[in-house]
Length: 154
Image 1 (tube, rainbow, N blue to C red):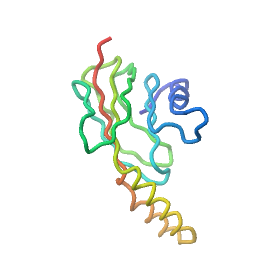
Image 2 (cartoon, rainbow, N blue to C red):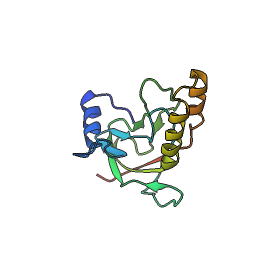
Image 3 (cartoon, helix red, strand yellow):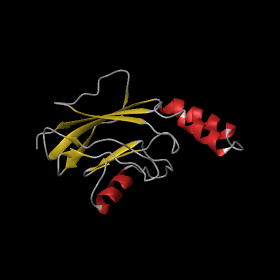
């Protein structure tokens, strides 16, 4: 999720860190920013954002992270990534509008991507560039995220 202010971005990054842990948490929220750490930097997960009426994290096909909350001053959700990756997701306008929203993040495919990434890294260490890129692109979409948001009474 994107933030307009650098201090919001820093707050979310800090929220994702666990003292003494190099990797930090998978998912963290601070103010209007949600940070999701994907399984590997060279793969591209699939992301779906849903606006729902109330808390829903009971779908057993997903591994659910702890529920969180976002404070969205515009009521619009933007999904962003590092500038080296192309992400074509339109903004999501939440029916509840601006305010505090509950948040549930489900994921599948993390372990599979991590294992496959180790294999691809080994197999492509001396491979031509085209083969290396193709090997990493073959992992796109294996890791998936479902982000659900709902309005919270304030």
